Length: 316
Image (cartoon, rainbow, N blue to C red; front, side, top):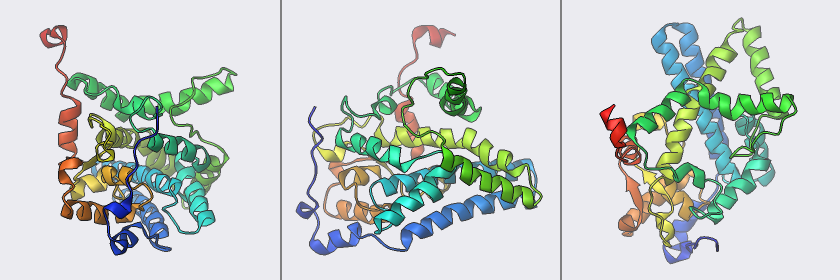
């Protein structure tokens, strides 16, 4: 099928407005990377200082959300939005963002740009994420249980690795990002650093556990909010959903303005830190009715779990 229709920003924004939202800062991208790692270190330090079940669960949720944050910053770098210097943009994405969570900008960028070119069309490699919805409440509950118990992590990351060790050809992953040398180098640094400080257990407990539980869950929530049940039409403003996240949701589910996904798809080279400005300008210019906007992730869950249960399930 032909690629999706693009919107010329000059038909919507004044030159001054477009310059304000499309401009790339030399310091904001690096600052977001530092902030993400700061939250990760701070959450881990909180549990180390006050070890109890509550602080551990809090640390897992904060770190898992910031692992998603690192993936989001790598995603922004795929559009050149992390730094105006292309080489620095790519280096930060590879080493400071993607590597720690098993991502690779080199593999991710062509995959993701294909998603933008054919959003919600048969050629869209992310179509598998939105196609199943709506599902029943029980189906969604089972998905969340698999995420939080590490089953999704095992299926996506451990099982393919074991099959490769056995010389078997596994089914290609949906996202062609699998742990490589950068992953082991960056994680090796974390292991050495935490062990040297006397916390040998910190890497599995405060990095792998969040990656195996909360990270898959919020990644699923993100994909559901972005494209599930958006009723895509020829209008580019219908290709993705914006979710009006509250501060708690932004802290634990949707870091770095990722919830402004409609704006991102219409203007995919606007850096993430300018998406909220773009959203407000579009509302001021009367585009609210054309956009797919949902108030909060609870509403997303209600929509995605709106399929009626089968009679046999209801009887059970």
